[in-house]
Image 1 (tube, helix red, strand yellow):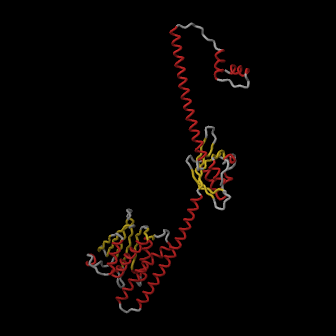
Image 2: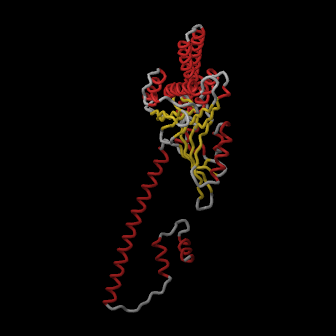
Image 3: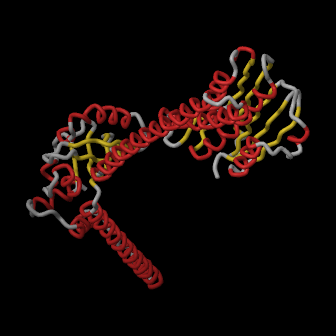
Length: 405
């Protein structure tokens, strides 16, 4: 074969031979049998040649169709790569730019520029110092993973405002064994700016809300103090007890706003901590010797919104006041148990039990006309809950209610 081609090149050293010329040259060097053919053999040979010719024509048509499809796909890929609004860049393992599309060049430069100016340059040149360490760790993870990785980077910019890009990349090993990084990136500066503004706005609102809660708490404490002063000027025991209950109800609300100031969740209170704080304050305020009443707690971690905690706090306050008044009068001692359970169905169960003499039958039958009992029933209904009261080794209050309206 090589000798045949050499003979042709000797005749025309500057011209590459065509396939036709190569075929004719090869044919000259072959011995052709001169065996005579009869008519039938000639016809069969002509038929075979015609079929073979048609096969070649069909193959040629198929090759032409495939070439057209490849050209269309290549053209589509080129258009997508060139006109896409997303930046595309191919990097070596050393983060040198092998290829980049116009959108990527514009994002890195901040203005329209020719992509070829970036070829061979280090991608790190365009990354802000604040993001250099993050980029290094990102590339290390990328080299050891087969999955796509993503990161937000700050790039160098001549503008006063920082510019951020979200980058997604994947490692690819080519047939030649060369490893490259295929990356896409998008300018997300506007999104970052909006998020920062929202964070600042939220922080301001949180400060204002905490300040509001602080002022409400102070106002409630002032009202409670005024009631305390008024209570001590009255000799009537009934009036004294009435003012005392009013004072306790106000304090139960004040605790809510005190906890809201320190709450981890805006507009919500930890019910476990609230029940503990309310119980301790009532014991300190209404029993001269709190040690004579043992308090047992079995409380789950439950968060509840402000509106519901205020109403629930009033119910708990009335139950605790009744327990201290009727279960542990004078110097009587005993045990008070609080149990709070998250039922995992959007509802909670709060039980308060004392070891006192129990509740009168009239109250159990719902015939009590005291203000405290009416307050409890009204608030439980408002909370869409149910309150069951029974005697079981003392008084047992079982309150079930949903966490949301």
